[in-house]
Amino acid sequence: MCRHLAYLGPEIPLARLLSEPEHSLVRQSWQPRRQRFGTVNADGFGVGWYAEADPVPARYRRPGPIWGDPGFADLARVVRSTAALAAVRDATTAGADGEAAAAPFADGPWLFSHNGAVRNWPESAAPLAAGLPPEALLQLAARTDSALVWALVLHRLRAGDELGAALAEPVRELASAAPGSRLNLLLTDGVTIAATAWGDSLWYLADARTGRTVVASEPYDDDTRWCEVPDRTLLTATRTRVELTPLKENSP
Image (cartoon, rainbow, N blue to C red):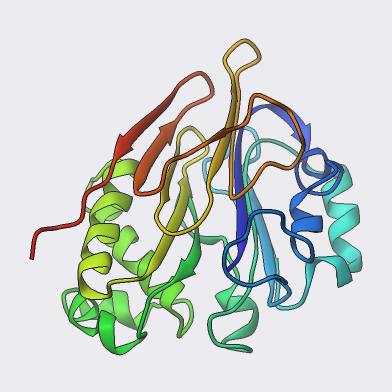
């Protein structure tokens, strides 16, 4: 279910991240190498990026496959950024909400993506949804599991949680409420990346010398420095540092 990627580092064209590598996110939309569930990610895509001196990211999202969008190639060729998050989508429910359901979701300085599925959605997540403020439910971006996961994360971000904590507790709560869910989450504010490995592949490539960090569902090339993140792990990263913390399920 889906592939996604986040980047922090020197300013580069988006194409260098998303379309030029041999096993780029664009290629992963039809030929992923390490995707454990699903084989084609053609139910929408999106990219968010940060411009200099502006903490609020821009986004470009579409409901169809990334390879069929003529505007994306031009955008990726000319837009340059020091931080970005992008995703290609394999929908849990085909056709649900179109572009509104495509990651990255955004609010203020944050960009978010969910690779996976909440098992027995929506019944399993109803108790967690009931714990959100009514305005958060009214503002759901789409009628999908990923949109609710984002609402749970956003609620914690607005309450002051750091990025890693804002991901970790919703993952634990969802895993308890809906055992068997796949909850690979990816979040950035343009300065830090947080991600969880829970049920699908997650990798990172870090180069402290150049100040570059990439976190992705799978490597986009065959660079030997890519490292796989163990399942049930929280990753937090800056341009020069990567930390891995084991995630444990909440006790019943």
